[in-house]
Length: 107
Image (cartoon, rainbow, N blue to C red; front, side):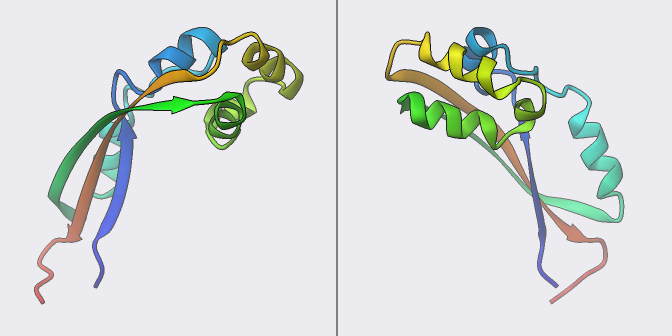
């Protein structure tokens, strides 16, 4: 049986874009929801990934439109906000990746 993997945004994730583009905030209770969803699993690994990316306007638009904020910002408003940003923009990636294995599973 393959392990299950999921991720959760940490506090600094996309902070620069959340402020300047009006993106939705970090979902603080997500770790608890993940724990409930994987209650039949044990967490076998956790890794924190933090880095900075340099993104142009096309990259910024692609990034925002693939995430949950895409449902909260009308496309024309997002386009105007992205156009107003200097390019390229340095963006923080800050995520936590968790690996779960079913309890009692042995190989």
